[in-house]
Length: 378
Ligand code: UD1
Image 1: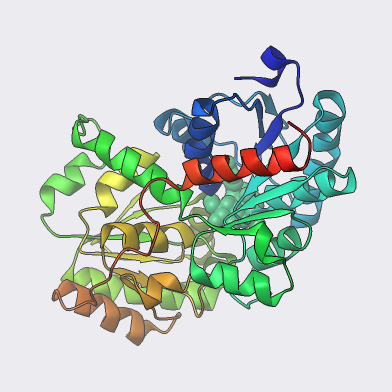
Image 2: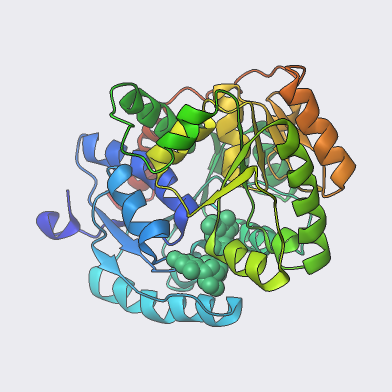
């Protein structure tokens, strides 16, 4: 139910970039189901804007059209963050807000949390407490700052709670609820069971290759440095000699592949970014996923697909401790060796972490409804 319909201040929900959408979709559904109604306002900052990175994902995820789009677009981190702040403040001024709910760790998460806290609006952080310990990652800075100014914390794994308590957050504000991204994954996987997939651009690849691997890479530390990207590219080329690979390429990565003249060879199929269902249709049946994505580390753990993470660290340690994820860094031999184990069916078995059961959003909205009442805003 929209805020305007209700005549009361909404919980303003923020999305900005691709990995936010799949987390927000189940939260909005849970808000919509809640009794008594809690009005929401969906604000899209416009950090991601391409059809491939944005529009097709929205329709796939059954995410409602944003109530407001701030259309900030791409820029340096400073300019992008500042632009979101400048454009978001008037939204709070004109609509009011009982709380601002942010997800994940992108620049839009940080920017909107900062605006809210300075206007004394409570900040709700979903997927709080994750720490890679690596301040060279922009997302780590976003996570640290957002958590330092949030009021309520919803965590996806035990490390999230441990980190927040170590940083001095009160236990009563930290809630281990499971993972909204897994809520969405289960919902979409069910939908996919009865979905016509023949029209997907990647259907031909899948039909032609009974066994294959999926690649995603977009972290600046992996794709912005020519030597590092060339080393990873060499490893992918070697892996592809044993197992054909398909690589939906993020715009940042595509630009650098061309700029650095990296040739991944004939057995790595490059395609543009895929919408959620089509990408799920690929990776759920892959022999291995090779990635630097945070979300895919978790989604592969949730469905038991082997995952080789091309990073030195992870802010999502439960995927390594309990799930199918192995961290290999950017050393070519280690990437090839870990992929080889998966190809031979010898990668480690994992289990699904506690509360990754498809009901996290429901728990969040229940807790939030209670907390908002306690804070006397209901
Ligand atoms: C952002 C997030 C990252 C997330 C990723 C998922 C931050 C700091 N980073 O990184 O955590 O994992 O999204 O994709 O918020 N571009 C387009 N079209 C778009 C968006 C971007 O072409 O719709 C290009 C632009 O050249 C832009 C570049 O991609 O400069 C990077 O985009 P940006 O939003 O700055 O960061 P991401 O690398 O996408």
